[in-house]
Structures are given as C-alpha cells and as structure tokens.
Image 1 (cartoon, helix red, strand yellow):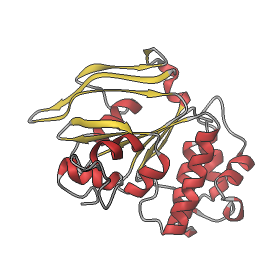
Image 2 (image 1 turned 180 degrees about the vertical axis):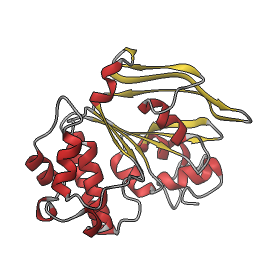
Image 3 (image 1 turned 60 degrees about the vertical axis):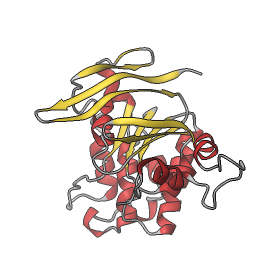
Length: 247
C-alpha cells in the first residue's frame, strides 16, 4: 500500500512549550485517518504542520515519498473549524470566488449537488443554517478537486441529522479513492468514518491502529478475553488518557 504521507520525528517547540514531541506516523492513500486527542494534546499543531500553515521545529514530512513541493497546496483541501464567509456573497458566488484561486477546479454545479447545496445556491451566506454552512465549507475545501482532504472538527454544532448527512458526503469522497485526515471530538464520528486512528496526548502519539484493532487491544478483559460493556473508541480513549475527549 502506497504511503501518501510519511511523518518522521515531528517536533514543534515554542518558547516555554513543546507542543509536538517526536511524532511519527504514515498515512496510506485512500483511507480516512483520524488524529484524536483532548484539548492541548498537540493534534491541531500537528495538522497545521502537515497542511503547511506552520513550519516544524524539526522533523520531516514526505508527500508521495518526497519532500512537499510548491504545488502541494494545489493537491489538498482544508476545511477549517472556523472560516469567515462574506455575507454579501451567495453560496454559488462564494464557490466561484474560491474556484478562481486554483489552476484545477471542480464543476460548480457538480459540487453543489455533491454537498447538497443546490437548493440554497442563491442564498446569501448570512442566511444559511449551521449545517448548511458546514456543507458549504466542505464544498470550498473540495473546490480544487483535492486528493488529500483535511477536516478539522467538520460536524461541530450540527444536529444529528445534519451530521449524518455530512458523513455521507465525506464517505463518498473517500470512496472515490481520495484520502482524508480528520480531527473530531465526536467518538461516534471517528469510529464511523476512520480506517485508522492515532490518539495524541501531551504532544505524543500514545497509540495508533485501526478502530477494530484498538477496540480489540484495549476493550477486552485480560483474564477472560471478553469485551468490556462499552467496547468502542471512546472507551479506548478514556482507558488510555483517563478523561473524556469531549471535555
């Protein structure tokens, strides 16, 4: 299996803080990779280094087996947790604005359809709901037809129906052979979407593996071999860190 990203001994230090402390992992092409952890664990800093927003203090990041080049930004899409949208633009006008920033771009009508935005395409950005806004932010992240998509807590603030709708869009994107790196505070979301997961705490990765592997590893009684009452990803996290991810 080809590694799309290879992260080696990544470190990020500030004056009085080591935010990321010797982090290494690989991400295969065509999977959804979840980077999870409590607030302050270092996951956001790690993601920002992968995206090229901030530079690492030390360590290496390889994309398709080579150091990232200048066209790396053309091949990735980023859905930030908080993005300001111009209120005097419509949904369609917003996508056209971002479309012009790239050499390669998706067809606007296809993008509107894929993200369930066709019915509101002529509505102004300040007249859409929270769930519609998150779908628009996802459409913006997909406007350049990326093969690697970064999602930073994409369903925050959504009701359950809107969240599941967003999951379907993300699943369809992955089914086309693309790769996703996801951070989320919802364990159900990570367990539903992710093929592999790495859990961070204190700037380090404390465990990683497939969702089923982590549940098998940490949710079985060592004596009987039986699963614990709550055999899920959230139970794995609580057992390893001693606190709820949602805190």
